[in-house]
Image 1 (cartoon, rainbow, N blue to C red):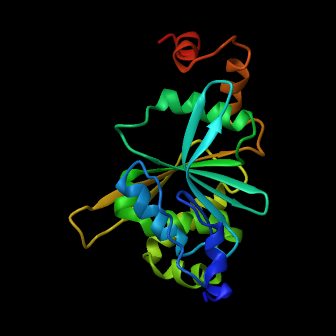
Image 2: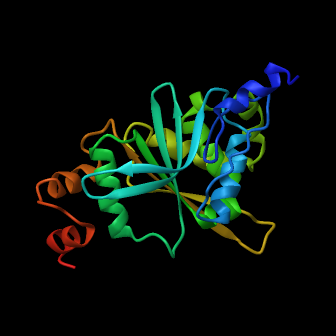
Length: 228
């Protein structure tokens, strides 16, 4: 007979979504669009608090079209969409309209973008940024360990940038991350945040423009707004 204590947490688990339980393995099976998405999911699951829901390839259906978010995190009413951007799969103009409609139609509270390069080279910094922004979703293990995984200089730079903009995020915040002991002298960690609680965020001007168009598409909105 299987002990119910060991079986019960897996009742919450399926192919693409799990409810974190720190007493058990928290393996998110996917699907994933890339290796870096899988790597990031595996790492963040180690540090999330019990009860946090994390899902891959979430459906985000808007009047502009149906989109997918790379990772979705939910905890006590907070909804976060995490995007891992690769050059081959993302264009800035497409993401502008996509994000604007996702935010404007209240499908998430925030969209956070990391580049694939940042996940490859700076994954601990990316996790630390999320930890500072949303400590409520992280475990006591994260509180203890994440600050020790990055250089003090990088930790200070990240902390200063976030504290300056905590309630007034720019469209893109650049953190200069230094690795003097490697062949890569300097790598940028870029984080792009959209805060739904700020109605005057960058996305709102695009959403207000796009929602007035009949049967909008990304192509038609680009032509009408940018002339391209």
